Image (cartoon, rainbow, N blue to C red; front, side, top):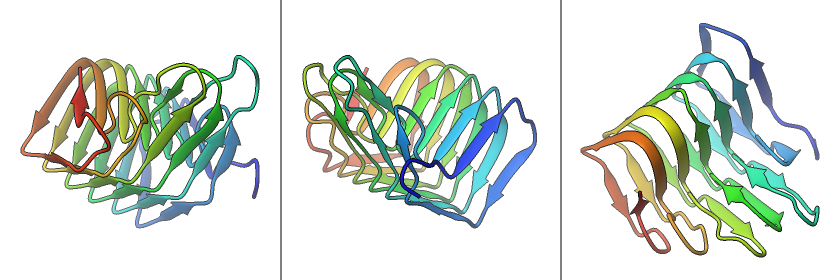
Length: 178
């Protein structure tokens, strides 16, 4: 399915993704595995693994290989977000595992690991999780071995983010960048 994301969720409420494996999504620019905009969703007991976002354009960007979410309220629980990657983006590579812009997220009892962001000229942010705006809670979660090449390898947080009882370890550089 080269060039296709797995889920596109727009203007939806009460979306439940449960006990699914979301893998091999490939998309240009944003949202390899899951794309959400103005959604209210629960992601429970899912494996979001090996999704890919690319951009070869000269001024291009790539965001959210595993999950890309804008203005959404999401509960992610008992899930793995693993081995998702953003590649070949000349500029602006944010959120290898999860990209969040505004909204409200609660991430609990999950593992965010071995996700990666890469870009040619600018600094990539949030190998595991990129958060910009909104109000979010990350609790009882492991953030491990993520890589953004430069900054915020585990979590990039630019918003109201509470991190409670989490292990953030073995990321390429900074575990949490705020």
